[in-house]
Each structure stands twice: as structure tokens, then as C-alpha cells.
Image (cartoon, rainbow, N blue to C red; front, top):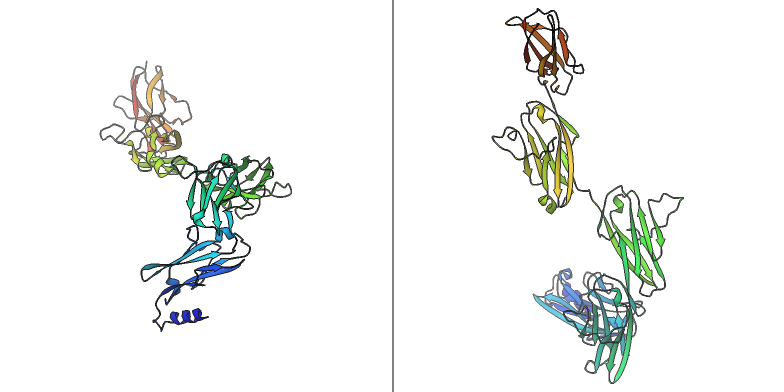
Length: 524
């Protein structure tokens, strides 16, 4: 009670006479209680705002007791260590506990010895029913053998392997080794493997007597297929995850099940329900099926294994991703551009990592499968049609468009050994091209039959305008204008014999007309 009154006085904002002090309650140096519960509090006295004090407990194994540890209860003032009845790990909990705080810029520590019995005892922790289970490849395992109530000067502890051979201290090549501490010894497995399973013995020699304390280490081989973790998946697809116990280490009862991310067991298939997620058991394994993946599935899924009463688990994380691809902008299958104008087409990567993007090679390929190179100032074509490199892609530049540039362009992206392509069609519209190869197919005394080759129609319907005249005469327009789908042939009648005629033709559409193509023909 006196402690509480002194605490209230020193915490008063109007009284500053009390010096700051680290206090244990009870004060120690020993807390002995036959049985549980028991507790010890630590606080800084003489500070106006107790929450500003940095207080820390360290357990007998030298580990800082974090705020989430079940042994620690923190209030506005106190940092209380609590030892409850149902924990019952007297060996582990026995020893020196150190409370430290920073007071006036200095670290101040106080220690209290906690024990629960007058009887000497030897224990191994962590373990449950003298056994411990681990999954192969799960990393480090440390077992501590501790002697309580014995004389440190007359007690020796050592670890023996399943063949009763002494396990030595750490060496560069040793994966399993020991560390000797005050009345305790640690057995450490740097990387737990299936071959480590077996019965390990802690031998305690004291006063001419030898005591043995044993723990069964069970190591199980468990794998999930697919083995990638995290596993990248795509939305609205389906996936199956298989969990299998491959090396049961002599276990008799093995049960495998899948758990939802919200810790509920995945049920088996039921034909009466909508089964988007269900599981199917197999010998020492289980497969979970997820159909039509949604946002809620982008989480951690747990395979839970019960082996001879020991619970183990292995997690796998699903992460949604967009598959790598290249994207062309404008994002259309085809684009229409008018003759004599300029256009730019971009090709960029999507879904690639920064390193992959830096190493990616982008190329533009024309309709003849020729790679389009960079700009050349005096090039007949490359000054108008060329590719430009970008940090994350490539730009295709087309200036002063002609009908020759129409067609399909392909962007090709090479990343490592992977090649991705995307295509876009360029349609060039405008006035039609002039007909070519105009010639006389048949000549008579009074008629001439001409043929020609059609040019590009400017992406619309075209017709052909034919005119003729005698040398230096007036042009006469033939009344018939053949259409685009007609045979390119026309007969000019009513002509004079042995006369030279000039004949010309051009193409017309809704955007205008082409230049003329001419030929001179003499009648018979």
C-alpha cells in the first residue's frame, strides 16, 4: 500500500521532489510461489507521463518479451509479467527476468528471479507431450534443455542424437550443433530435414548422478503443387492446388485438409450446392479446386495437416496478375488516315517487370516482312517512314502518307526467349491512283479498243473517265464511265480511218480524281 501512495505522490504534476526510479513490484530479488498464477510489475516512478517511459522485459533465455507475448500485460503505468495456471511450463518460465528503462539518458536495469518449486527439475522446450513436429524446409529449429534447482558448478548438460552420439558445438560445416549456457544447453537445426527425425536426449550429469530427458522430433515432407509461392494467377480462371504428405516419418494417423483464408475448412464437392470452391481428399493428401477466381481468392490459402495429434500447416499465396503483352496505340484493329497526312503508332509493353522492359527489343515490320529502321534524312522512304525507340516501347512514324504505306504493320517484342507480336492495319484513303498500262488491244478503220490496269481506288468506289481527240483537236469525253468492278476495257467507235488519236484516262471517286494516263493510236 505504501508503494501505491508513493507512486500517486510522485506522479502528481505539482510535486517534483521525487527522483525518477525503476521499480519492481514485488521488489525481488526472488519471486517464489508454489503454483500459479503469479505476476511481477515494472514501472518508472517519478515521471509525469508514464507512457513516455521506455520499459522492456527480457526473459531467462535473453529474449526480449514483445508486446504481443502472452506473458506481458501493459497498462498506462505498468509492464506486468503474468504466469497463469494453465500454461504450466515451469522449467521454461523459471530464471532471471530483467526489466530495463531509460532514465535521465541512462539505461537502468533490475532483475528478479522467478521460480515455482523447491524441487530440482529438467525440461525441454518448446515441446508438447515430449515431442515437436516440423515441416521439412521450414528453416531453423532450436530446442532448449534446462536444469532448474541444480548447482551450476557441479552440473553438465549435453545433447545426444538418436544414435546416442554427443552433438558438438557449432562448426562451419555443422548443420546441427549445440550451445552451452548457464544451466541450459541449446540444440539447433539450421535447416530442418526429414532425416533429422528421431528421439533426441538431453543428458544431465550432476553430483555423480545422470538423468535423461528426451524429446521426439518429427519432421515431415509436405509439398504443395504448383510449388511457386506466391503463385501468380489470372482472374476468372480456374486452379487446383494439391497438398501432399510425402514422408510421414513413421506417423500412423495423417489427415490433410484445406482451409479458407478466413480459417474455415474447405468442404468437399456437394452436387446439391454451387461448388465454386471445394476439396477432394486422397491418400495423405488433398486437392482444392477454385473456379472463376474472384478478388476474394487473391489471398493466403492454408493446407492444414494433422499427424498423430500434431498440427502443421503450409501456406500458399495467390496473386492476380495481367499476363505480359504488347499494346498498340491507337487501340484498334485498323485505322484510316488520309493521303498526304502524318500519323504515329505506338507499341508499348504491359505486364513486364522493369528489368524485362529494359532488356526488351521492339521492332516494327511492314507488310512485306521487312524491319522498319530508324530515320535517315536523305533516304527516299526512311525520311518519311521510320521507327523510333522509346524507354518502354517503339514509335512508328509515317509522314506524307501515300497509298504505298497502306497494309498491316506488326510490332514485335523480344524478351529473353519469348516473342510477342501485335498487329494493326493502316488504311490510306483519298483520291484514287492513276490507271496504268493504257494500250490499244484492237485497232480497226473506225474503232479502237483500249485496256488498262486499275490503280488503288482510295478505299472507296471509283469510276474511269476516258477522253480522246485527233491531234491538236478538242477532247471528247466518252459517255460511258466504266465502274471499279467492270473489266478494264472500252471500245471507241465512229473514228476516221488512218487518223492519229490521242486517248487519255483517269480515275475518279468521292474525294476527287487522279492524274491522266495517255496513249496515241492510229486507226487503220
